[in-house]
Each structure stands twice: as structure tokens, then as C-alpha cells.
Image (cartoon, rainbow, N blue to C red; front, side):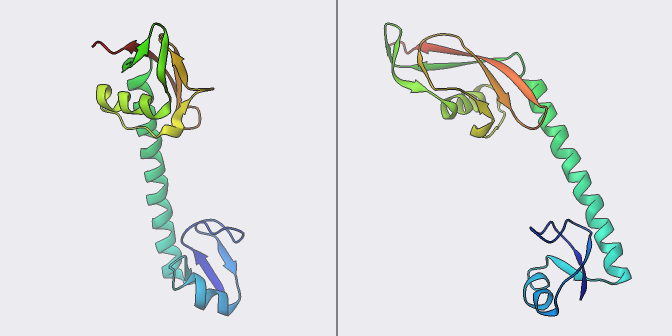
Length: 149
């Protein structure tokens, strides 16, 4: 049975491809889950429209990532932590950096975007790289300061 894929299906194909699968696989898996449509001229037209929408969504996502990078590049955030002399009582890692960016710049980024070799355990002003997509990197300065009592 020939079907047109509505989404990328592992080990089968990508969106818009016409693939030949067994009748049972199409009837019992692909069609009920709306992963594919029977291959007809109307379905081909519908898949082309879905492909255009997906390309538009991906472009909007890339534009949003670029806007985030431009917004954050060269900025700084301040994190207040408990410390004794130069050593912190805990550490400053990706979750704390993401929270500080959210509070100060009103930009939501995932924790996985923060590139750290290890959490910071001393006071200072390290530079941190944010990788929010392929080719989209920003460098921010993180001010780690002691809490005032």
C-alpha cells in the first residue's frame, strides 16, 4: 500500500515522502496515528501545504533563536549567593544562570543551552556561553556576588 508520510517516521521516511508499506502496517499503525495518508492527489496537495507550514514554523523558530542571541549577547546577569570570603556555600550552575536570565532579561532559554565545564564555586565574573541552536551562540557575563546580610 502506498502512503504519504505526514511526519518524519523513524526507519521509514520523512515528511511528504511516498513510501510503500504493508497493508497491516498502514491500517494498524500509520493511518490511525495520523502519521500518513493514503496516496491520492488530494493527499499530495494536503502534504505540500503541511510541508510549507512546517518550513514556515522552522524559519520562525530560527528567527526567534537569532533574536534571543542578539538580545543576550554581551549582557550580564547578577547572582547573589551565600559565601565565606571567596568560596561559595554551594555552587552556581545552569539552573541558577537560567533563572537569573529569566528574571533580569525576561528571556526563557533551556538549561541545556548553558555551556559550562563545571559549576562555579567561587565569587567572580566568569563569561558563560549560551548555545541556543546551531550557529547561534551568545556570551554573557555572570556576576557572582556574596549576599549582603
